[in-house]
Length: 129
Image (cartoon, rainbow, N blue to C red; front, side, top):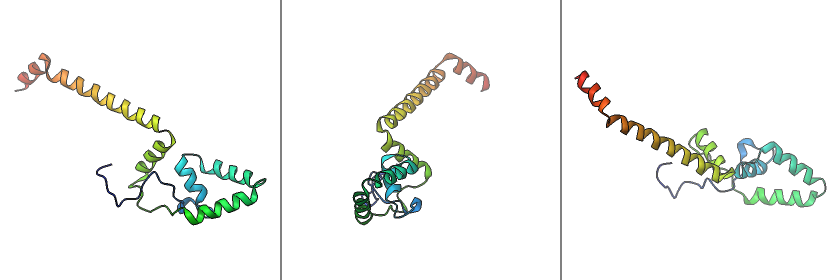
């Protein structure tokens, strides 16, 4: 995640996912946007379509028309896509993970600094030279 590019499409926006679509990609897009399992979301939509058929059909058609298709270059690779899905699914968990990672890096740097400033390091270095 280098620099900000205003031309790049938003990763937090709702898109229809035509690559994983069965009909128009609406359910796949909503599942990706919310972090819900695609199959579970499709089953819920089918179950809700039984008592609310007109509402589900009209809602699906409206979303098909209004929600844009997902751009091909939205993510650089699968790892970046997984990162953004995790951020949308549980933002606090993503921030917590980053905090743990930075804490681990900080501890590692502290250990390296302690070793470099220790007398053992100086003695080892002098013996090598």
